[in-house]
Amino acid sequence: MTDTPTQLFIGGAWVDAADGATMPVDDPATGEILCHVADAGPKDARLAEEAAVQAQQEWARTAPRARSEILRRAYEIILDRVDELAHLMTSEMGKPLAEARGEVAYAAEFFRWFSEEAVRIDGGGGILPDGRNRMLLSRRPVGPCLLITPWNFPLAMGTRKIGPAIAAGCTMILKPAPQTPLSSLALAAILKEAGLPDGVLNVVTTSRAGEMCEPLLRGGRIRKLSFTGSTQVGRILLAQSADAVVRTSMELGGNAPFIVFDDADLDVAVDGAMLAKMRNMGEACTAANRFFVHSSVADEFGRRLAERMGALVVGPGTRDGVDVGPLIDRTGRAKVEELVADAVERGAEVLVGGRTPEGPGSFYPPTVLAGVDPESRLMDTEIFGPVAPILTFDDEDEVVRRANDTPWGLVGYVFTEGLERALRVSERLEVGMVGLNTGLVSNPAAPFGGVKQSGLGREGGRVGIEEFLEYQYLAVPVR
Ligand code: NAP
Image 1 (tube, protein in one colour):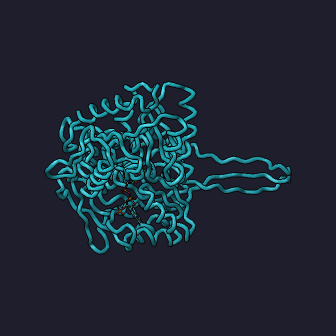
Image 2 (spheres, rainbow, N blue to C red):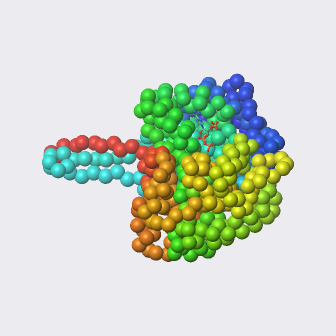
Image 3 (cartoon, rainbow, N blue to C red):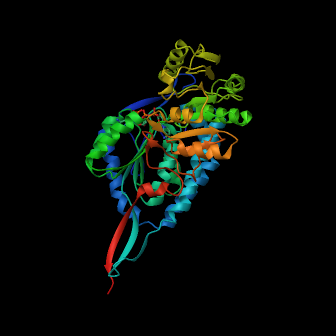
């Protein structure tokens, strides 16, 4: 903690906010203040923008191999410091250390993946159909980018954007969530150490997100917005991006269905449910939000899931043996409490959990609800907590219709031993990703993203770098 930077990172230098403002960073396990970091305002945003704009042309001309090697070095430094970064993440975000270590490794992998993609950016060309003209296609970076990230995966949501932006030759301003600025500042220090030129990455921590970002989006010098966060904020940013026709990538909220058919292997389904629900204490866009279980196996599934959820140890993420850390803050916990109370009022049975513990921090116990009324609010709200609501179904068409009956479409989970049913149902689900007999889909080599109001574009995979590249077409006559 003592060496972690707490200032803004602009033009390769660590600086205070222009007006000297700072903001506290809390430990969600105790509610106490961990430290203060610089709280940027519009003037700092302009300085960061200037640094990114100034660095853009030269950075775009850097050899792809040089950009690749910076990412590769940063990947190696992150892996050398897994424990240190995991402790930092747990202290500001709350997730248990084992999960934080997992996220650090996952975050690093985006740098390795995009270090490999940086040298494979290709163009194309050929003779056009009329035979009179040639076409030469080249790829160029889209330009200075604004990257906005949420608090739930403080490192990986950053590397998933910074990795492809560096690989493509873009400069950038990163605005992390105010709850978890420290992981992003530590990442900036690592990239500097890895040799990233000044001004390519600028990090502005702020509690004044709207005031800071809106002028950047409307100003015309930022050419790309890559946002991960809620659908509600995504809509606002899309509207703000319209003025200067800023290119956007949107990784927004989810409302994942988790479907268990009567022919599913229940051991596999319960293992999948634990992953899909409990990763990150349920604070994940990919979290299973609605469990649809065939009525013939629903009691057995509910009993087994409640047993597994009830055995998890809740406590501060830094303590040995803890499986479930605190939620991000008391506001987040209050929302989960309200959603559970609403479901119970409408007749849901609490199989396990459901009671907020006394004491400091924002802990909430793993909870399973059975017999949930489809009209309950948690059916159309991201729960963002360790709560598994179970509903039953009898018919394949019916469950597909209910699963798709939501404005979101990020991910769905399907559990069945029938190959044809697995493929048929997956194809009918209106989602960007499907976990088939697995509760985990995220992987840096796969395109991550959703349809409908879950977003626009993809991160990771071969297509991840495309979001940061433009085509230029040269017409050359054949003489
Ligand atoms: P959020 O409230 O939408 O905030 C996300 C980021 O946007 C934060 O840095 C936030 O800063 C910033 N922000 C909010 N209003 C802004 C504005 N007017 N202008 C510029 N920036 C603004 O989401 P969250 O609560 O941090 O994260 C949880 C959400 O993220 C969930 O909906 C989850 O599903 C989604 N998520 C999606 C993915 C995905 O890949 N699809 C991955 C992870 C999370 P402030 O907090 O200071 O406003």
